[in-house]
Image (cartoon, rainbow over all chains, first blue to last red; front, side, top):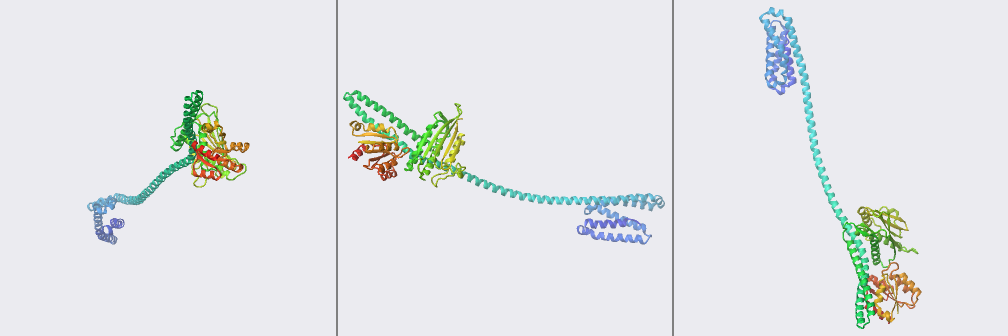
Length: 454
Length: 125
C-alpha cells in the first residue's frame, strides 16, 4: 500500500479549507472534487486487490505529481506552495524507488530497507515542513491581524487627532476672542481712569477757584489803591515843591517809595497765586525740583481754607501751623505734593465742618499743619508733614478702605473717591514715601506724609 | 467820627491811613484797626459806643465777618452801630446773607475809596 492517495486527499482537504477554493478559485473546485473521488477510488482499489498495485501506485504518483505541478505553477495556489517543498522529496524518492523496481526487482529488494529509510526521512521531512510552515503561516496571520488592528488603531488615533485639532482650533479662536474683548475692556478702563483722574483734578480745581478768587482780589485791592494813592501823593509833592516846602516833599516821597514796595509785593503775591493755580491744573511734569515744603503747605492751607469758606459762609475753623525751619528745600514734584496737601487739608476741613454740624457745646474746629525734620544728616533725612483735625475721626470699619479708589464717605456728588487713592499713589510710588493715618473715633484724624530726601 | 476797620490783611491799615490822609489830619475821622473778628469784639466790649461805624472784611481766619456782624447786631443795639461789609466775594449769596444779618452796606474788593467816602458821608448824615 502506498501513501500517495492519502497525501492527495490531505492536500485537497487542506486546499479547500485553507484557500477556500470554492469561493476564491471556483473553476478548480470541481476538478479537485474529482481528484478527491479518484484518490478515494485508488485507496479502495489498493485495499481490495493486490493485482494492480503497482499500476495504481503509478497513477497515484502521476496525479500527485500533476497536482504539485499545478500548485507550483498556478498563481492562485501561491499560498500552498510550501506543499511542493514538503511533498516533492517524498514523491521523488518513491518515483526513483519504483523506477528501480521496474528495472531490476532483485536489486530493489536487496536495497529495500535503505529505500524504506530514505522514504521515512522524506516523509518526516514532509510532515516537518508542513508543521513548520503551518506554524509560520499562523504567525504570519497573527502578525497580519495585528497589523490590521494597528492600522485600525492608527485610524482611530488619527481621527481623534483630527478632532482634537478642530477642538484646539475652536478653543484657540474662543480664547483669542476673549483676549481681544479683554484688551478692549482694558483700553476702555484705561481711558475711563484717565478721565476720572482728570475729573478729580477738575473737582479739586473747582474747590480751589473760590479760594484763588479771594486770594487774588486781596492783593489787587492793594495794587489798585496804593497806585491811586501814589498818584495823589505825587500831585501833592509837586504842590509842596512849588511852594518851596522841600522837607514836606521829601516826606511824601518816602511814603510814595513805601507804597511802591507794597504794590510790588502784592503784585508778586497775585502772580504766585495764578502760577500755582496753573500748576495745579496742568498735568504733572513729573520733574522733581527743590521746593520749600513749608511755603507749599502754607499756600495750600490758605487756598483750601478760603475755598471752603467761599462755598459755605457759616463755616468757621481755626487753622494752626507749626513749621520746622530746619527743613529747607527738598526735591519733590511741586504740583503733585500740592495736590496731596490740598486733598488732605480739604478732607480735614470737611471733617471738622461735619462735626460742627452736631453742635457739640464748646467745640472749636481746628486744623493743624505741622512739618518736622527727622534725621540730622545734612543730605539724608526725612520730612514729616502732618495734617491733623479734631473732627469725628475715621471709623474703624472703613479705616482699611480709605486709600482704595472710589471709596468715599461723602454724600453722592461731593467726593470722587479718588482723592486719597491718588494721594497715596503720589506719595508712595511717585516719591518713595509713606502716607499713614492715625485716628481716634470721635476725637479726630491725623494724616502723616513722610518724604525721603534721597 | 470813630471807625473800626476789621481785616486780617495787615496792609489795610497803611492803605486806610493814606487814603484818608486829609480826614485824619483834620480830625474828622479817627480809625481803629482789628485783625480778626475776636479782636474787634474785644475792642467793642472795652470801648462801648465809641465806634459809630464798623467796616469789616468777611473772609478771615477764626470768626468770620458775618459772625461778627451777627454778634454786633445782637449785642450792641442802643444805638446799633453802622456796619459795612467789605469782601472779595461779591456773589449774591454772600450779599443776601450779609443783608439778612443786618449789614448797612456791602462793598467789594478791590475797594473803590471815592465810593466809600460818599457812603460814609451819607451814613453820618
